[in-house]
Picture 1 (tube, one colour):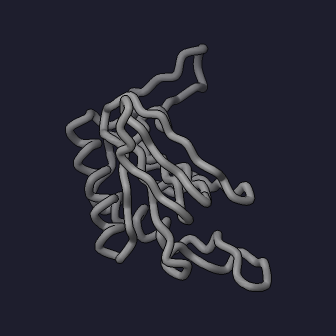
Picture 2 (tube, rainbow, N blue to C red):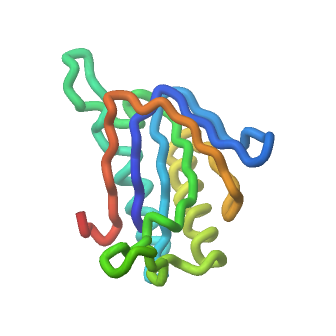
Length: 149
């Protein structure tokens, strides 16, 4: 599982004319599910992301987690994070999980965050979405359950 995590002061996702998820202070998380991923990967990602210390404390140092600030998550599934661009000009998405598996693990990730007491909003799986956010810092980190980076 792979994620792009952005510290935001606000974010929302829209499908058509409907806002399907909206948050204030917290994390915008784009999630890509790989074919070899399991629920253990989703659990790892939820624990890691919710506890990332990327929010500033009173001294201006990144020492606080989403849990500490009682922030929110906007999670949006994005299979293109698994795109392999090493050959040619068109990314290969062979590593991306099939939709049936990906939605299961995406939902598991979101539910795990909620079980930890985090308000978690979502997009709509496999829909054409518009994502809007205000990245604070800017702070953007990459997280991979296989620990490739």
